[in-house]
Length: 110
Image (cartoon, rainbow, N blue to C red; front, side, top):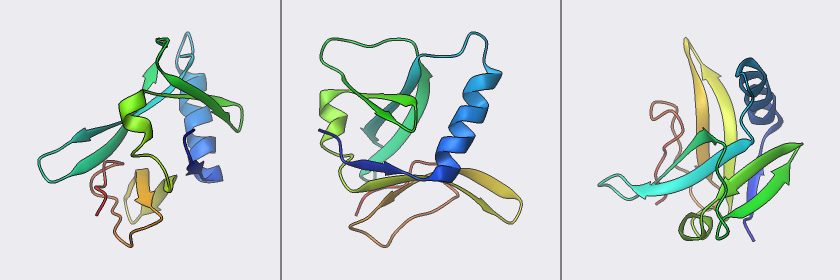
């Protein structure tokens, strides 16, 4: 079971963007990958779900992750932040003090 938190700001922005897409996607895929410096988090719209995916609902939005990624999503908070003239989704590790806006949601876990 994925233990991820998603802030109200992130849920609101995801809802806004999903409603702009026609037809709306079935959900948001959250995944991890190695960016050469460690584990990075990202997300994308999806219309595909495989039998091995973990599917969960938060705030009326369907989130999907693969089995390999789900282990790296525990204690992660997905937020949408605005700093000066920049805004974006940010993945923050509750077990780490490190987060950033410049990576647009691909902050690495320590």
